[in-house]
Length: 168
Image (cartoon, rainbow, N blue to C red; front, side):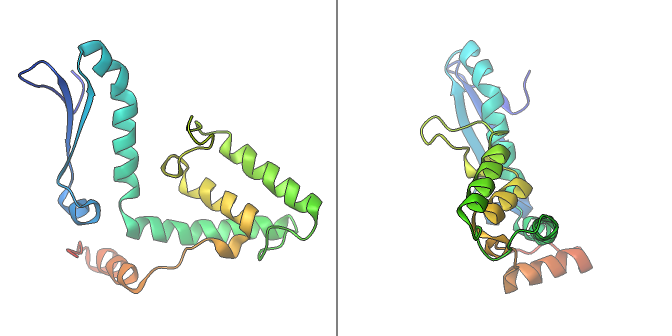
């Protein structure tokens, strides 16, 4: 039996997964319900991608963790660009530098499965670190938005210092 997969009275397989109370306000829902397939074979074939998609949504739903990670990632990306002697403020001064940056960004994104409709990976599939690297290469490190909003900073403070989970 696969986790979160239920058999409905009409024989269809339904993926149902509850959302934790901490993430309900962020996601705006109490559970995910997907229909991976009408037949058992179809449901088994689609279970993996369906489950992975929900996992990615749940992992990316915690903004205070993501923002704190992004601040650290941005520092690391800035250090890498400085070490390579690349400009932090732009996509490159010369055409050769812009081409090299574009090729490096493409090599980072080649690790991910491309969406057949767009030809590029979906943004939610790309890790936070790789997304920041690509942004820095194409637009400069200062285009990475890693600053916490006042609300995020306060929520982060409450959770880190006092162990409180914001209800907003």
